Image 1 (cartoon, rainbow, N blue to C red):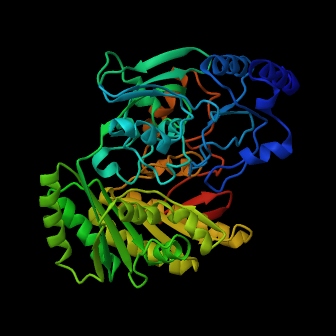
Image 2 (image 1 turned 90 degrees about the vertical axis):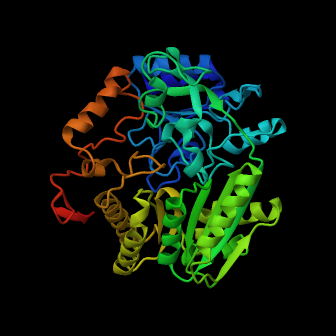
Length: 480
């Protein structure tokens, strides 16, 4: 079937206004939040599951690549159509179908924006816990694809802990349910397999989400430090004391300066690092934990220790942290964000190595961390129009990932593998591991779903990873 014939069939399903195929219109869909670029052949925007099913049947019959797309905020190239194909956008599937306040559940469509769900259920004194920094624009379907985390995942877990059931569309257009409205369901945990599979196995079309009751009391602290090492030590001390805050976030001096230049949340300008620590729960428990955390802070020579006095001040403190990536535009035209995760006890060591990398490549690196669970977010600042700077940024990102794995960490904490990290998977997995995982694609009969993502493709001609961490690449070398 020709491209024009496929376009015609899609237009009969969703209407011509929701089938995009002109090159100048497709440009808006050639990228996500990463630095990769590639145009799909067609973008189709369905309104319901029936339309999705019909679209998928056409793609399956004609072996057309299918790439699911939420809000395009992903940070690993997961929504990039690097082989062309059909990008299915979920921007019209935004209905909150049912709210069940008694059972703390909701059924929603995948195009619902993360923060809007919490706003909708707040009248029942409930909220949805996973809160990526992009939560005001990212969609729940995209969160499922990447198993997104967020600022408060230290205590409450990531997306997979809050999605208990899904209707999914298989590559041949069949619609099936995995999971249920209950915590447990018989059979294989296909729900858990699909979450985090980055759109390679199935497309989520309806979601059963778990809602939490709003905590009785919340306390938020800002602590400003004279050194990153002191801030890192405090993180380990808090966790080792037995306290599990809902969030422990760290920002270094460069990130602070960017935020203060644009958002001005009132972070101390002279701090080398700040921690935002939040605890919540029953009033009495929060009061006791606040005392314990304050005592830990007082063991260090802080520049400032501040407790939010009301909800307005609390929101302002978090506004700076959630807006930091956008604020980096005040420092450089582009950034390359890495999200390796390491043991908390290795924070000081790894952050120092990142600083050394920054000096070596002569590019600034701003560090933002989900420090409580060791999820790093070093942002390498560069100018995309400068080829040399772009290459240096990519090399630095790869070197940081290698360091994360060497100290006992992993390649990704929440952004996924996608295009960004697929060739580095052998740093963590042997060939048997990779084969076992990739076999799931054939079990789901989904080779046309987001093809050539997650697993090494050989496009970089990786032949060996030697002890120096050098990958041979078509006669040249890139340092990882």
